[in-house]
Image (cartoon, rainbow, N blue to C red; front, side, top):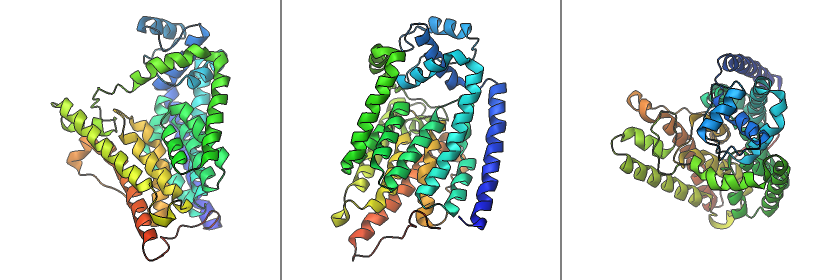
Length: 389
């Protein structure tokens, strides 16, 4: 990395540290970290010999009151691994763990941006990645709610870097950890199996077994059984949430058709199905260059970009993972491109349009690369190798 590349990267790093530091102070002072409180309460429930998955709302409120927690949600429907972690952290207390949790996630966001840039060759891409992170609203939303997305982005970035360098086992283990955090990265494990990267898949399976064994002393086997029984409730497949922070197609259609929610649900599911079909088609082998390793970053990014659009609801803070496809698309086309929405439409669905735009940019580039690979033996558009400027 040259001096001219290092200076803007360092300036952006200072800006990120200052922005996140000030934001964390505000979040703690104003008791905003709602999701963190849910995590902490799940650990407290296990510490009291109860299951956070089956606790009635009055019991949950009583538990919160005993810990002097006033801003929280019910019920807990996340994977048991997070509850196991917070069971371990119980003796440290609510506020000290909150500060540490926010700092760890802020650092994870910044490190993830650096790792993604390094996976694509480093150089000026470091500054681009840090700049995109600084402008990415979902990152601030993640910290405001005390969400775990910073760690999720970091493990996805590590998996992305590992797969770029054929570090199969490390990439698979990182995706296993991502699956333990949020479940949806399991789709990337299916993609790895489809690509025949069995060492990564095997490492992911082994890592999930080890993570489960590590969690057992804190949540017990019943914790996994309860999650299996109640975890799907988090998806609420028949519900149409029309709030502005719901990014998914179902949410967007619900905002556009608030008086016809059955139709909105049907249209949202149809759009999600179309995205799945296009994503699978673009990730399928085309011709003799079926296993072209050069296209791994685009395929990885296309899947990551598609995931927020598919469930019944995806909250705005979850779009922080779009940092990876955004940096990848910028690297491929050589310039960052903005996508504007008409003002009259932004009220209804801007966040969904943003997610669709990132997915569509990945889809377009992967389609172009596949098509170019079939024509006249012409090499596809050049992308800098790792370590180049």
